[in-house]
Image (cartoon, rainbow, N blue to C red; front, side, top):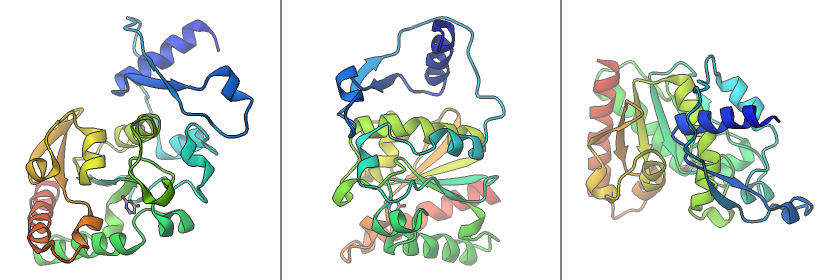
Length: 243
Ligand code: URA
């Protein structure tokens, strides 16, 4: 790659909101398993921006290939890219695949996914909005299952975030729903916790973002109040997008 092309790529990533990239040390390159990444700040280069014009989900998935950019590739069975309507005005963003998702290669197909489906389908039906889960697009911050379902690490979110950013840029939805604090942190520059941020509108590159609780959190029995709040959030979101 020429220096000019490299500059263009760095500028593109900065336009996409990515201000850190990670490179593996040359020693690590020769190992079969990826080493922890080293953060490198993108220099403040002033060159014409390279807009990802005509970017598509298919192209992004092609670019991911058999991605080995972070350590999460080591234990995954599948890359869980996203599913649903590619032209949806509404995108849900979760944290990362769990065991069922890793097995099937699809997001939100386990218990939390079933709850998410119910939440979307039932709320829309009650509100008289003709929308079902299959009508929206669903993806995650990281596309590979973190070991033991741990929270993705900052460098994993940063590296995989480039694909999420491109997905959102390509779909250009009317609104995004951030499910839980990992999605919230990936999309929003906020120091607030989820209980304060939920139910409010935020912005990601000009696109309205509604933050709500992650369905896994809602599956805990004592969370009746949180469940009611999440249903309220969804109502607000669906009316905003589809009225
Ligand atoms: N939890 C997530 O955040 N994403 C999934 O795809 C499944 C469970």
